[in-house]
Image (cartoon, rainbow, N blue to C red; front, side, top):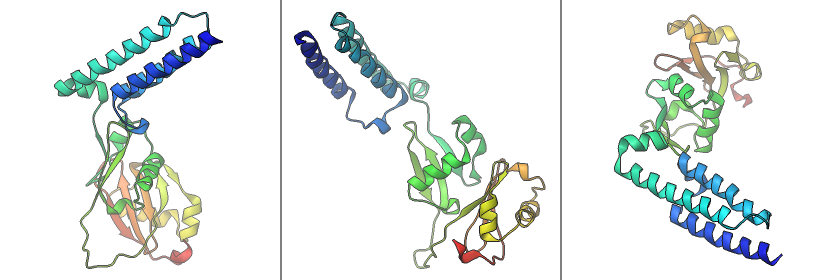
Length: 231
């Protein structure tokens, strides 16, 4: 028992020192290689602690090696932009002036629902208010708003999705009391006769429909709503 206790104490102190050396980032702010090293250190540290018959150096050597590897990769990242892009990746624009960037979503292995959740978590509910949305290399999203006139009060509108990457949101169509044809007519008026060409469409209480094609610039349309006050 004494051996296990001492190994646990020394392992804790060593891991604490290593984590301090790695920097004061929160888990969600780590670069990919930092997160991988942290997870491996946590796994390696448990090995000699759980088994009194495993030599203590079997835990110390891997931890020190990983700490050294982190310092080397951090140094290389600071000195070389190309190496930094290989090790940490690069920021990717998810929403630009043309709307949702479908190709970049595919690169990040994200779907539209993931993007909606990320945008909402940042305090934005309307894609039409966003000029740019950029996913940083640590997974966080940066939002740049469109220019607005501060002298004109904006009504509180909550967009609801109507169409997401090939699928209709039946409940929201019923909520807004509109049909698929009314929405596809807006697609067609802007040159998109096949709904499969559209990535995302939503509507808000004033009848404004926001549409982002898979390829091409986003656009808006207008519908008369009988049930606009239902949400």
